[in-house]
Image 1 (cartoon, helix red, strand yellow):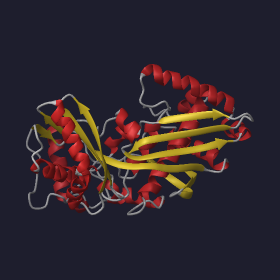
Image 2 (cartoon, rainbow, N blue to C red):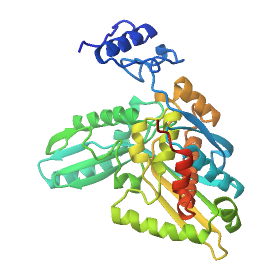
Image 3 (tube, rainbow, N blue to C red):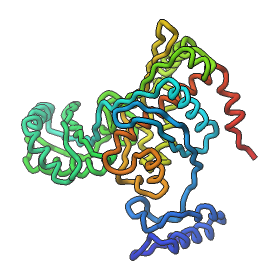
Image 4 (cartoon, rainbow, N blue to C red):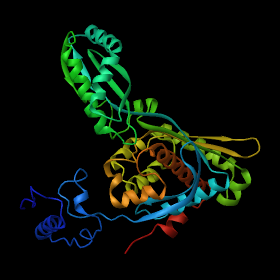
Length: 389
């Protein structure tokens, strides 16, 4: 196969995109008519993709309206969801109807931190321990060095984790309205260059990343200590409303919750809920998020309580929700439009967006759980989810 065309002077044009599609078609015989149909200007794409050749179009629908009673998101929202899974938008809309009639989902962002975790390797464990003490004593200088690289990033604290003669430093930053992975990588590197210049005693090796920050993969440290936004969505559902809208009872939902808890425990799952990833992914694609961060953003915890009067309290906690409303893919035309639908585009909006994501996830959990206990799960997919030639 020939090398794909590239223009070193101006690679982001419709002509270059067409040239690359033609090269692929010539080599494979594949028809790229739909891939080549798009409305966005390729000149907007430097920093988002290399070798632009076209678009992958994913169907998009709006679920809702979703009523949120948050600290940042307040009122009703249409929620854009990009997916090719039938029943998804309908199911989330059903959950949103239930929670709307119950007075709305209460949402709370309880932590905010993005990390990079370099490792320092010493001659022995004693040197590593002493280095840890030195880091604590010199935090102010380390923080100053890190923050020379960023206008919006702030080094909040440095966690330390030791094993043998190694010590991982988990640098924890707030990053404004950006997701911040690149921001904290640059800032952490600058801080570590300052640390290395001080010549720590007994240091043998250093690496800026050694898999402890677990970027784009789940880890228990992220669940316990947060990565991105830690958000809780919660609601108490009146017994009559559960019966009228979901055709089941709080008692049945609570019983199913206990079975699901045990199933998740037996399987070693990172989530005792049903399908956080569905809502998170559909919103991420629609709104220009880094979709690979679904790996950590879809982990979570659900909790249910049956009240003496038959009402049902339910909460969903997302401990590592990595989202942005500024930078990355959020400024691309369709993604920007989707964020604007919810009033979530630009600076000062990321906490609002995080609350809407969490509220959406909760609605999806309630809808699917209700479908399972009322035996509507299979029939709904048969009705709405079949697309076969």
